[in-house]
Image 1 (tube, protein in one colour):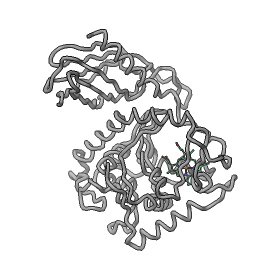
Image 2 (tube, helix red, strand yellow; image 1 turned 90 degrees about the vertical axis):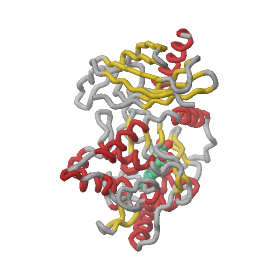
Image 3 (cartoon, protein in one colour; image 1 turned 180 degrees about the horizontal axis):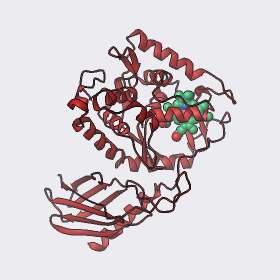
Image 4 (cartoon, helix red, strand yellow; image 1 turned 45 degrees about the vertical axis):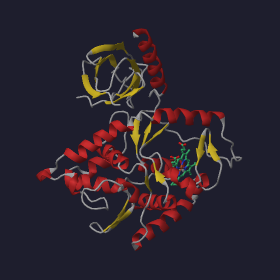
Length: 286
Length: 104
């Protein structure tokens, strides 16, 4: 038995090491997309897809989910406040289903907030985190995963297998959607790009990466699905806001300030477009 | 201190399928940080797995294993309710032990 076990272990090590983290996410953007011919699923894309599916069963995102749960349930702020006081839109302390129902209007702050923004708001308000510290390092890197990223992962996981249902009732929610739609189509910068240049048609891709047509409900779910996601390159958790900033960078736009209104608006637009589809929980990205 | 592992253990026929996710930086010692300084090697180097009080795996690992690694084992002859104890130690002396019970 020992022999058999050690063989299996070697196999496990090899699978694990294929996702080695020697590479950092590239600093330089890939070359701009040519109006690509409708791409048939290339062999390599299909292979990556299979690889991703295998890893999804043991997604390291779970490690961050556990960490976030611990913070949510056990961490105390000044005066003993906890995240049980945090209202994510469904009542104080209610986490189940909250993630898929944001961005939404929050009367207490008089703002539409996306999930990430609301969670940071609560961690500052109840747990005593300093917003300026969070802004210093909003996204994970190889040295550190900020606490709020783990909490976001936990909250997102509590909406696994639920339908995306971002509300469009309050006038400000409707306005956020409209502004987001406008930003999505707004062309500017050295290449005169908009989000729609890369994400507004079917069948586009950059190198091996398929670019979802985020204007279409069936594909807009990809703006949502898999985020927050564990990125195998580098080996850390990244959030939707990171994805947004990285796309602004690819678009050769200045990167928005963390937790800005424009990102909330973009997320409102893309989430509402994906409404009605099932969110599968934190994902894994290559 | 090291973060907890996530262990899943389930019987499939007469074989227990055990999977463990470990939270670890697994630095190779080959990387440089933004300032150009080498990031020191930091990796899990020893793993043991005990099932039902019996050692079934004693393994050594090194820097070719990814960050936050996943391992999977199949153990014949284990049964529902057996305790699984997994332990790792890294090259800096940090260590962690976690337990789970084999589910049906």
